[in-house]
Amino acid sequence: FVCENNLYATATPLETATKNQDIASRASAYAMPGEAVDGQDVLAVRAAAERAIVRAKAGDGPTLLECKTYRYVGHHEGDPVVGTYRTQDELDSWRKRCPILLFEKRLLESAVCRQDELDAVVSEVEAIVEESVEFARESAWPDPETVGEHVFCEATS
Image 1 (tube, rainbow, N blue to C red):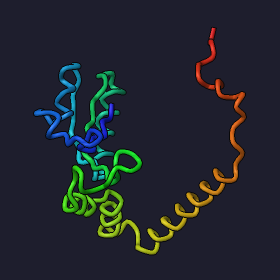
Image 2 (image 1 turned 90 degrees about the vertical axis):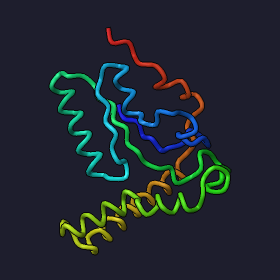
Image 3 (image 1 turned 90 degrees about the horizontal axis):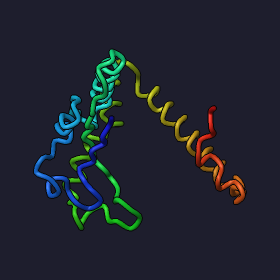
Image 4 (image 1 turned 135 degrees about the horizontal axis):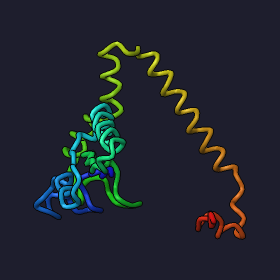
């Protein structure tokens, strides 16, 4: 089980909502291990997931992974990013720990790839996203008669 802990419940900071801010520790109530991991660190999340997968495949049951991360946008349309329940300083400090930027820095520092290679990947992804958006915009609306399709599974016996 993966809990993406972005530190807020709508507009309520986790620290206001509960005295036990360690979500992973709650796994013990379900007789399973829990592990908190820095959700901003791609490789830390991968390593924790690998440990949980190995454990599950060995027949030792599930694990609760709490990935501590941050929500950079409001909870809903019109929810201000800062001012109501978050400060600009808080947002800025988390932006410095952007998982993508941290991973890119690690790749470059370890010489896994060069900046031009990263730039090429970003350009490729941006093109794919743009094509996908255009495809969605140009696609016809679904037939209203299909609203009930794929809602329930088919009987297998």
